[in-house]
Every structure is written in C-alpha cells, then in structure tokens.
Length: 63
Image (cartoon, rainbow, N blue to C red):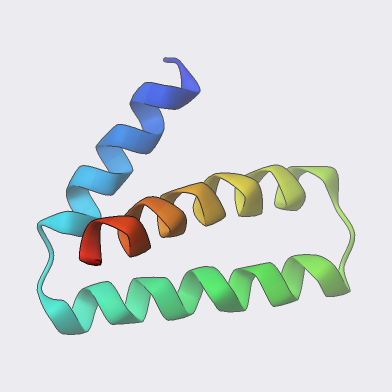
C-alpha cells in the first residue's frame, strides 16, 4: 500500500470521528512527537512524519 493511500485512509477515519475523539487523537499525535524526540529511533521519526502530515491535513480541512 502506498503512503499516500495510507494517509488518505487515516485522514478519512479522523474526519469522521466525533469532536472529542478527534481532539484526543491530535493530542496523542503531538505527545508522540515529543516522545520520539526524547528517544531517537528512526522508526519513531518516520511514524511522527506520517502523523504530522495527517495533522497538517486535518488543520487545513478545519480552516
């Protein structure tokens, strides 16, 4: 599965969640970024990049 399709699926799931659950996921993404910075691991950094891309899509869609 290509990365683009993966991001679209995750974005679709996030868009169709209730407001509180969406806020919780965004908070988890931001927390995951902090944890990944504290423990340098290439896999964590890649996951954080994907999650940040999803978060950017989410922020653009809400404007």
